[in-house]
Image 1 (cartoon, rainbow, N blue to C red):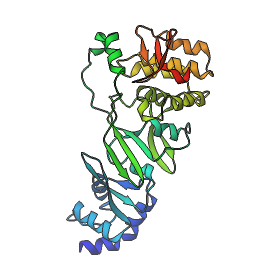
Image 2: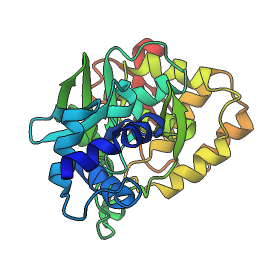
Image 3: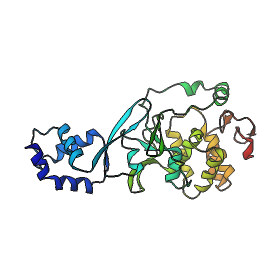
Image 4: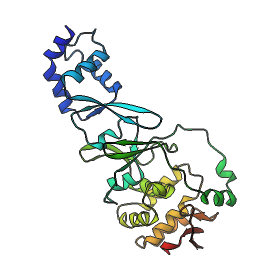
Length: 293
């Protein structure tokens, strides 16, 4: 009885998936589809989500796949063949593209080099008083060491997917858009330019970052960038590094750049970590790699 009812409405079920905006589903999505469409497809109340899923896998183009990270494997169900961009935001709620992948989506770089960076924000913690106890010694010590990078990496369909667990920003600067026929979430251009300064290890380095700052001219608002900086809970004075890059790019209005300087220059800061040869900008109180002098 269950199978016959399913088979009688198979064309409707297939048409639903064919016309749907999504092509990659979690188990919870399949459960919701059954509950929302049960009456319309005349499926019996006794049909469980497990049996419904089994029938879909047997009689339609829905297929089971998984993305395996070192600490967890995520099962996904895909209708026909979905683009990589649809998979990468489907296995955890509120994932979004970030860092070098965002640069690629915003067309500031031409090649993602088969690496995809997605971010999952940490839960909001109580306010830390660490920033009030920030000292020059703490900054010097921190930036003399290697930056930590995520080891939560999955190899999937010829790509390396880096799952980052960033600080909670309440999705600050995250937008929805379409890219390569997929609806995606990605950091906007101002947020992306901030992120790559905070974590340059998720790019191809300072030269690439500086070039992206140049290419972003006429596409960003420095005023909006500053507003975003103020909203994000940073301990370190990243505005000094951002102001230096804006000025070093040679394409931005100096009056706009000075707005970052007005945020204060209380400490000496660093454009990158573990710099073997560096110069110093008195204007920005910033150490930077000698090769961009």
